Length: 69
Image (cartoon, rainbow, N blue to C red; front, top):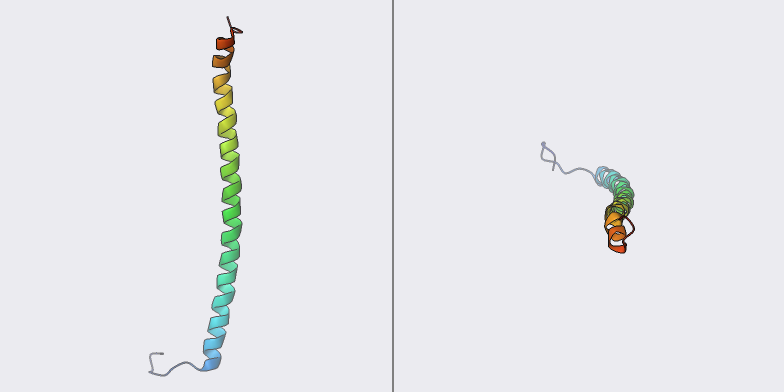
């Protein structure tokens, strides 16, 4: 209801609803993109962490094999 006490016309409500649907679809599209981007970055981060962990553990493995002595 508007401040003057009237209800908006059906045409006005329909235009507002269509605008909201378009905005929702645009935001959802952005959400899907960001969700995928986050998943890609998370995977890359885990891969880097695993690689660095393997580099950190390598001298210990060599030591156990007797290669560094």
